[in-house]
Amino acid sequence: MTLAKALKKKNRLIQKISELQQEVQRTNSGAEYEVDRKISTIDSMVELEERIEELIKLKLSLFIASTPMRETILRLAELKSRVQFLRGIDTTEGKEWTYGDREVEKHVAYDIIYVKEEVEKCEKSIDELQEQLDKFNHATEIEI
Figure 1 (cartoon, rainbow, N blue to C red):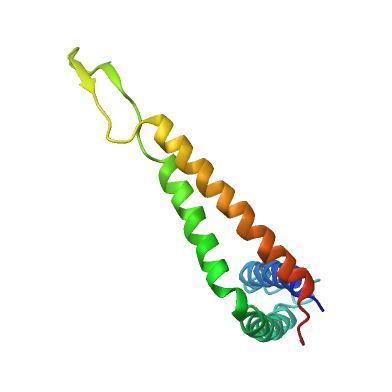
Figure 2: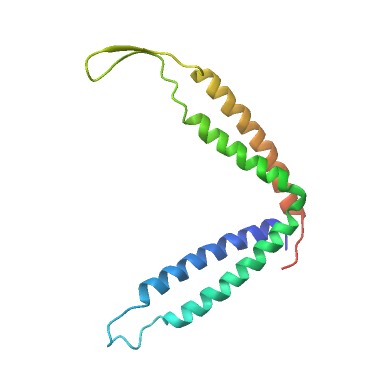
């Protein structure tokens, strides 16, 4: 199985685990006359534990297989965080009225042009790194 397919499988497993957790939480308690429920909470818990074990093994395989790209993966995460940070910078400049009808002149250290240019640089790097990672994920086979 390719790394790309294994990553999709991991995401499906995570979704299934979440559904099973919700199911166990929702069906654990019921009225005494609901003895013959359509969903067995005990069976759901057994399946949940099996899926968690499967996920652990899959994540370990993914971790080992992705070792050559670990720096790329970490760099991608940090660039994405930087974009989020940059987009949160207040670039409001000029005159502004406060609640007390007082005029305030706002100045910035980093203007909107700087922020936009930095975001574009980061996004370009993200695209390049993501392309490298995608190629690696589609070309790398792993044992599960």
